[in-house]
Amino acid sequence: MLTKFSSAEERITTEIMGLLLPHRRHVVGQEHAPVSAFGPQHAQIASFTATGAPILFTIPGFPCKSPNLDKVIGTLPDEGERLSLKFLDDLCGAITAVYPPGAKMLICSDGHVFGDHIGVPDETIDAYGAALRGMIRQEACTHLDVFDLGDVLGDADYDEKRRSVHYRFAPALDELRAEVRTDEHMTRLYRGITRFLVEDAAGHTGTKSALQRVCRDRAYAVIQRSNAWGSLIAEQFPSSVRLSIHPQPVGSAKFGIRLLAIEDQWTTPWHSCLLIGRDGVPVLLPHRRARSLGELVCKDGLPSHYVAL
Image: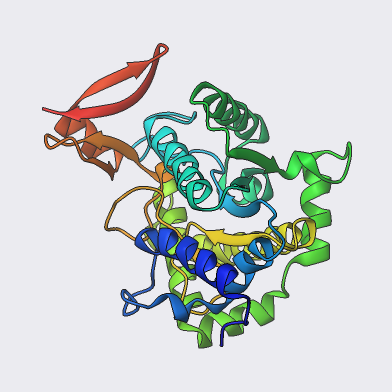
């Protein structure tokens, strides 16, 4: 049930929702849903339009590159991130065109939150984050900003910050396991993260079954930290419109959003490589496949993406 607001607030809120829906990252079987099905997002947006305040979106993501160079082209943001940032900035610009107070997108970079569980050093994550901020400035994405673990808990080191966030906000492991067993959406999320962890373990020398067991345990740890990070974001920015780079069920507190026009509901620029097809349409592929199909393009002396031959 949608909260009732004035007709003007209702109209503009519905119009903004209409700008989000074409980019929704949906779960299987929920491809088509009317604006009226997204009550939580309607209420979140309306809380801003009711007061004439700029809309604040928060989106966890842009953590760091996968450590598997068969999947990604390097350790720094590349053309995939650039196009994704431009999309988010353009989306805020489209909202500002119909709602003059405007919209801001806060990218809540979560690499440091679970970097120890995915095998990426904090120094590598710092370099990715600095390059991401530089890309936002270079592309003049005036609607975007970045928030990460370095912005909370003062001068504590990253290990201490991770422990603190986990202690305060992470769900109990037994509760999480029960949720994965009984909730279809959580089951898909768990399987998706397990798959990413298995793919990212490029240097594993043991058996595949042993790797699967390790990655299943690590997937729970990653979800615990991700949920904890989401709770911290909710505490820091309680009125924000909450977005997610993962598919989200209709009626969820978060709205799943696609960063690029790709069919795969799980692929992200930090787990893949961008290839510009012969038709000019960008697609995200494993690096090993992209380099077999295209010619490498470098920007500022660094590998960026491929163009189909």
